[in-house]
Image 1: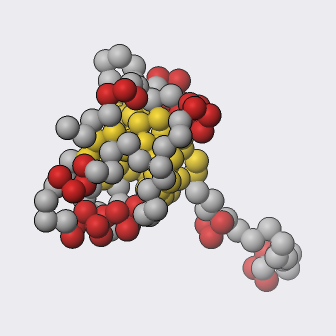
Image 2: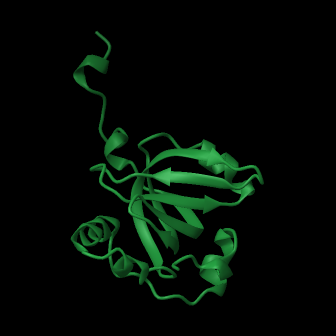
Length: 148
């Protein structure tokens, strides 16, 4: 069984301070390529317990009965498996602030892998910079902005 039950529910602040886990030397797209190439799903189970630092667009979230949150991130090319980040209740405001399709950097530990989902626990989320979407503040006014 792949589930890492000793991790319990997510506490992102513990990730950097208390855990000494190996980092998966694979990007999320690289992992998707690898997942497609394996003949036996058991090969993927070897990656449970590894730390990942992946980037993926936000999809949506669910709030569980106990208040815990499941945030879903999907690959840009819509391949499987997607990412399900297990988050504690205090991260609800941060998750609500995410917009669908907004790219985020996720750091967490793989707790389970299925053909459709990679579950991450102890997840820390950072938004990726959207510099290309922001106007260039150093440029002057455009000709249509000047008074006539």
